[in-house]
Length: 204
Image 1 (cartoon, helix red, strand yellow):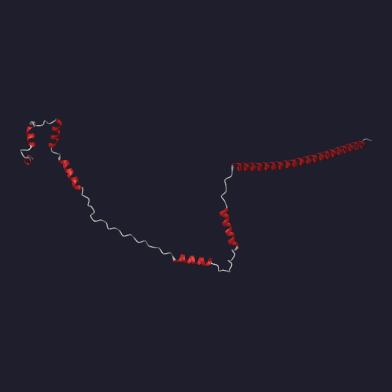
Image 2 (cartoon, helix red, strand yellow):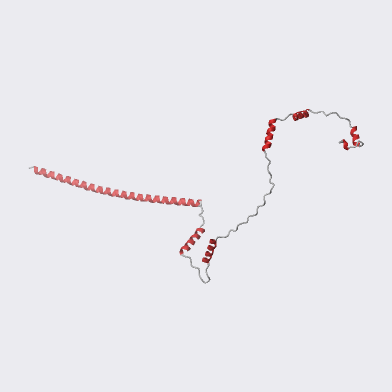
């Protein structure tokens, strides 16, 4: 370093004027770091490190760039012949020449079309309101009550007819009993008269 600088330069003269300094004193932390650096490393760890380094293989970089793929040409699908023929037949069937009236639809076709219109035109049924539900419940209750009243009237009329029949039968029984009692009384009178006549005949 000093060989490149001439001795007559001012820098060397100033450097020579500086006081000479002794060796630098090391701190205990510096001494510990030097001792740890001087210690030999363990062999097992070195071998593990070497094995790990050998196991890893460097990845090969792709040198050749992939060739740009050519864009695939889209295949244009041709319409099927059947569809074309079907559309032509439909158009021919719908075509009506000038001066010729189209035939009127039959009754079945008109009914089917009317049913389709009615089905499409029908709106979905609305949910019943609570007032409608209450009124329907009241009507059902009234009809059940009227039916019960009619059944009671029919049963009472049958009971009345039965009571009338019982009364007539009791009257008839009374009449029969009176007739029997009358016959018994007449028979008793006849027996009494026979006894009297027999006594007269026995007496001289």
